[in-house]
Length: 403
Image (cartoon, rainbow, N blue to C red; front, side, top):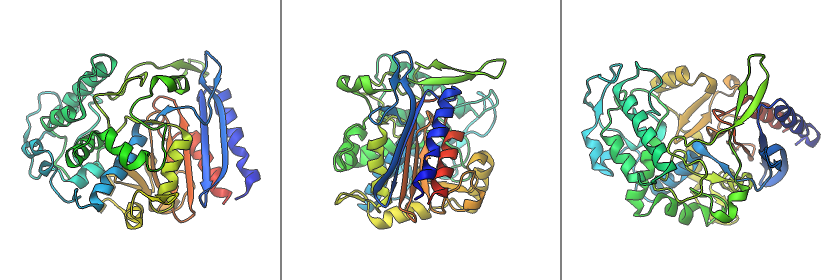
């Protein structure tokens, strides 16, 4: 790689921090299982002038889904989960699934024509969403918003709604379309977390710790941050434009999607879709494992064929059309197994390679795995409503054009 060109990453980071686009950010890049470089800028705690660093712990939010995917695929390899099986096989309450496509809280649901499949959960074609965005959303989305509000209250206080409780509550909520007929990002990975618990007989945190985190020494990755590590947990910030267009940063201290703000206690609800915390180095171990075809330092987490399957997975053409409409910012990608997968790189909004896969999170963490180039990228930040930002795309362009 052209190391001199990679120095442009620092300029991008410094500019983003100076303009208050982000409080702090870092990125770690590996090529051929060797570290190419690490860059950081800004603060994890502005008031205390604490630098954003390699050991800064960040809330991963939806990047958690990539770990849930690997956990589920381990069980697929063992014949304990079948992608084509009804969800009701594992959680029978889902056999009573209702559908409501009518807008508004008072829409009338009817029994679904077919059951949700495990693959529908993995591909976000189940019909479950992240709640209502307008009064005209279907009834089930309003009920989902109510559930998320309860989860936020529980996370901030009693901490008494479990992963299994969430799945059982969702089983009573009508989905927004017939399973397998549309794409909509939502709570499917949280239901999968409950499936993993049912199949393994372990809490989701215990399963991930035993089968993923401990084997590859992801020692800073968990569903909460213990007291002795709390000083390393980044604050969360919102970047807000004033009337003149100038940005300023404000702390964000609320719970979101049932995830506690301080991450200081073991949660009852271990969210397979959003609950993990980690560091850039810890998550790079996960990325390297995938880049190496499922193995890291002699420890195999997934079979090589399974990792290859992740790169080749595709939505059906009719579902891809729906994805393209709803997720236009992801043009050139499909979505399967809780990950984006590049399959038309010329349509992507950042330079990449066909087969590159990964995901991002609400606060801006980003994972990219490229088997062809044996390239792994992990970026972290703690910026609300971030996902894949322009900062991320700029950095990715620098990295790929330096290959």
